[in-house]
Length: 167
Image (cartoon, rainbow, N blue to C red; front, top):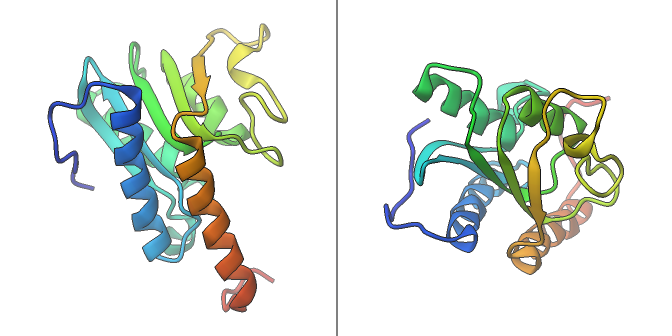
């Protein structure tokens, strides 16, 4: 997966989230739920991903996991101390746990996920005192754009019958 940041001068949370939104668009174009993620360390893009569980036949191929895998490969270490992950949707339990395990310093997400979010909505994994690492988190960055992309995707999905094999 080639790193695609077009502008090396990314400076703000919104800049990185815009890049994550582009990756979410890629997931959508592939028929996946439109979620995109970028992993940044010391101002440098070290990993990116978009949802691919259908295409990869892999239930763990969420955008966050794909970005973490790429970042770990690039740094040669699964511990990503000091890194920030930007993702268009509040992470699920699996992805929030992976952020803790990877020792990611900070999480920035766009839209909250009231049904399955594991950061502020349903669970609060990054803040859990039972775990050995805490992840700082900020939500709501470009939330309108992130939420609108997801809403449009699911509106269309409801109109078109799914032809997959998830029976």
